[in-house]
Length: 356
Image 1 (cartoon, helix red, strand yellow):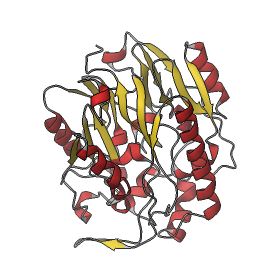
Image 2 (cartoon, helix red, strand yellow):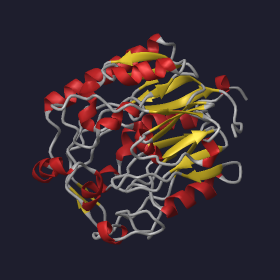
Image 3 (cartoon, helix red, strand yellow):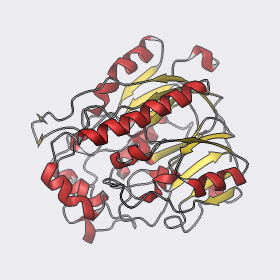
Image 4 (cartoon, one colour):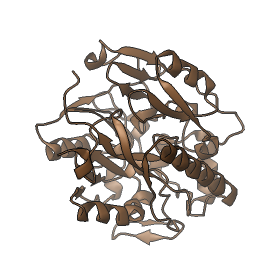
């Protein structure tokens, strides 16, 4: 079947994109302080989360981020891409399970985190942050639509997220060379810890993805896919796409501070070491670092959406024969992501194949 017959179909990060979900910042909530935040977020902002967790994000941050998302949607549409958006939800509402309580959620700004498209299937992933437990609800109308049109819609086992999942002394523990705040009591993973290269899927274990989560996904997808673990130097690792990003067959972008050894799979590829990001120092990066500049989105094997202020990266991409399309996106950065995070490529034109 061609992609014109499939409501969901995407096998990699570079085939021509036809439909994409763009997130929304509306209703965003500051997450309640938890050991998972301590493991991942810049220490200089810990007091912000401790003081304001469970409250709405400041309105000026939300409105500015939403303007960037609206602008991104317009640029995608101008490039011939169908754009879908989730329903905004008020995240600053408490909720509970039998095992824990949360003062609020987070946002629906990052579909890349909570949903994973592999082939003709869209998966709701079992996220490790308690505040994100119900995050896919904002996307449910779209998920139901895709299902009614014939897509495979799967929800991974909903995790219990009890205290035993989290290692309070994670700084002192290391297993198999990976120190993580997560134990292996149940499968958890974020979709943004995985990258698709046709029949090969690259991932890293992080503070949001444990080995049991990788095992669940590998078994679920079956023998058609090969999984490859990325090793990197990052004690705060969370989401692979600011560390390692295949741009098209034969071209790989890496974070030179984190990736010391290129995985064997990619050693014949051209390696682009991303230049440092140039986010101004007065922009609050509550969740992340200036390496958000790597978080680009390929429309096809030439066109690439990149944050407009990241001039050195734009030049580097152009020098590799790509056609960068600048997107004003600096105001979105305080929410912890950039263009790749804020999008989910639901339909790309192309078939499943091996690139190695």
